[in-house]
Amino acid sequence: MLRKGEVVTALTGIHITLEPSEIKVIAPIPAYGLKPGDIVFGYMNLGEGFLNAWFNGQWVEDFDGSGIDGTGCNRNCNAKLVKSGQVEWWIKIRTRDGVIGWTKQSDKFAGKDALGPQ
View (cartoon, rainbow, N blue to C red):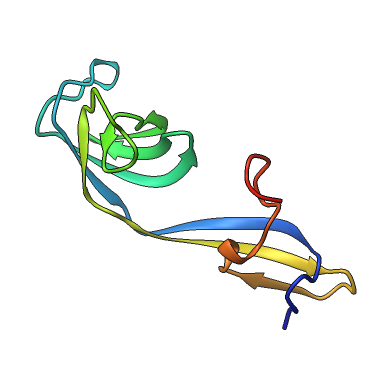
């Protein structure tokens, strides 16, 4: 068991989508050929509004979801988050004394994002 403040090294991680987000298009999104009423399924959030997505029989990596109302869009929203997905992010860590294990409590660690708190 880790102690609060103990330093660990992240070795790798895995993102698991248990259920994708459901996003309904409310205005045309020409870049993807989407029209009002289309449904986009969101998988892995890549940050800065981008995600991996499935719609109309195709998989799109780096889908620009910055226009999704319910995820930070404030104006010119072209889609609405209907249902949030269920995901898990597992991280393989190593302690200073070499013990290796997995955790899904990524919110308890600082320094995991260059732009986040250290």
